[in-house]
Length: 306
Image 1 (cartoon, rainbow, N blue to C red):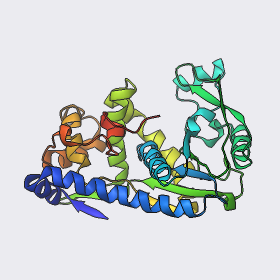
Image 2 (cartoon, rainbow, N blue to C red):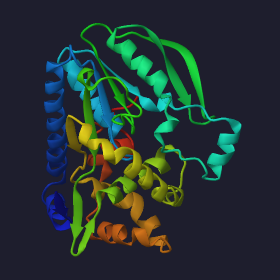
Image 3 (cartoon, helix red, strand yellow):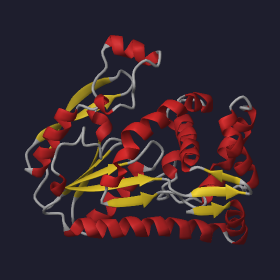
Image 4 (tube, helix red, strand yellow):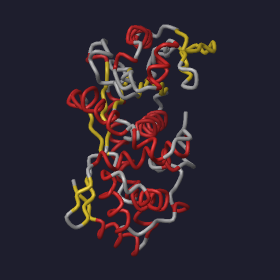
């Protein structure tokens, strides 16, 4: 699917609040339909796997799905697969600083522990939830125990959730969702690839929540994209549900967060088309964006958080 910058600008000029509401409602409607389908198979498929590349909106999508299932009377819990990362040794930490460790690899996941816990969930057995400390690259246990009750559902969200080298549990006990940006934004002869839209999301998120500059995020772009093409994209066909997380007004909402600094990064040719598209778009007042919007995962002030 493509959307033109002129169409976005016309919608903002006509009624920005109505444009925002319609785009949000479209996304919410699609997640609600998935929730209704998952609810029908909750007894045989109690675990939901949600995968997608970086910047795809996995966390918000998972938590909105949880909200709908809860409202239907099916208590649902969301767990991040990030907590199942393998701790790094001191040697590995030093190598990671030099970019000599593939941090996108599925081998970073403790697959044995993860699958033990998925099976425990299926059998309604208790286990202790791990917590990964990204500051120290270590795994911690806080004593938090979890046991699924019969009829409840559990969502695991993470970039490798559909990778069969990571998840060994039979597919007939799982529901599988793949989320990513699929829409392209066109501006004259420019067709902005979805990966560039996710890059914009990551730049804003990394600056807001990870104390990382735009240049630092851009420097990681090629390795992140290579990891996605190698470890994530090949398994999207395994999903039962495929969700385009593009929100029609999002680039206009990002414009003022990004444009000035991206204009200064003239030494990064990959950003030239992104700058031209942002320049062509009308800005959107972020105060109009409601906290339930998926893009609040990146710009902040969202209601869906762990």
